[in-house]
Image (cartoon, rainbow, N blue to C red; front, side):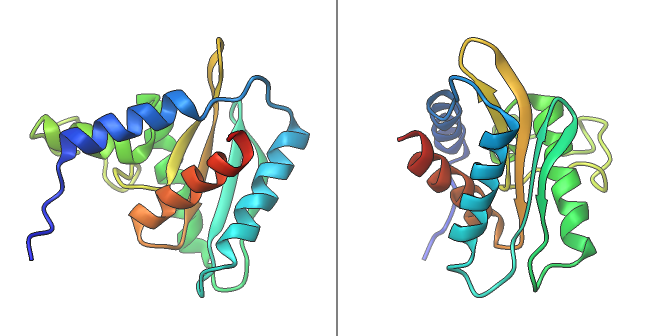
Length: 157
């Protein structure tokens, strides 16, 4: 079975998600609701999923349930740095890298500091732009991305 990924289609899918999943406004109370909803949804898996939401560089929600470790914290930071640098989801950044035929090193980035995989998503306010990052770590990276987008779908419709 060929499981090759169409990275151009993946980049288009991510761009559509980033356009669709934008808030009209976003408060710290909204961060709490989103974080708790992510945690609730993540409990459906048999593995702990770490969650972090930042707004303007400030961590406003962070949760490390049973089954997570300090390593998950490193992944959260790497994914968030990727989103912050590129202004798109970490999965979208990965797809763009693949489409361009480049490596992390080609971009002069340290792979210990940036993660080009699913699990980081820009926190966007419509008409304003990116104000923060939603990051999760604990599942296979495509599932990390889906956890975020599925939760945003429930919240934003």
